[in-house]
Length: 74
Image (tube, rainbow, N blue to C red; front, top):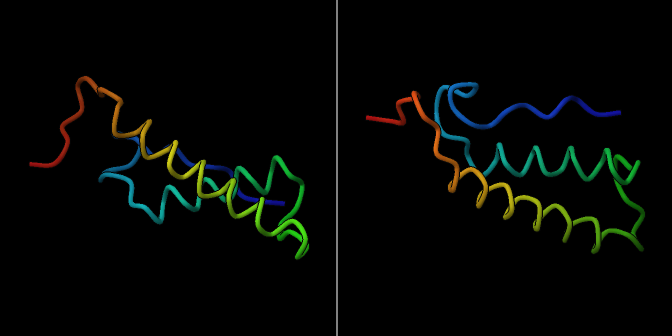
């Protein structure tokens, strides 16, 4: 149904994850959990809201992680 969600933190990702990376992971998660590749019109709002909330939580998580032994940027 959907591809695997990739790790978004260094060193698995050579550079910092983008908003697009985080949103794609959130979308994959919501698709997997809901069982829908694309929601019906009557479920679109809750589906999109879940993607937004998971994207925000992912951003907060990645920004808060302390990755020891990995250089971040210059």
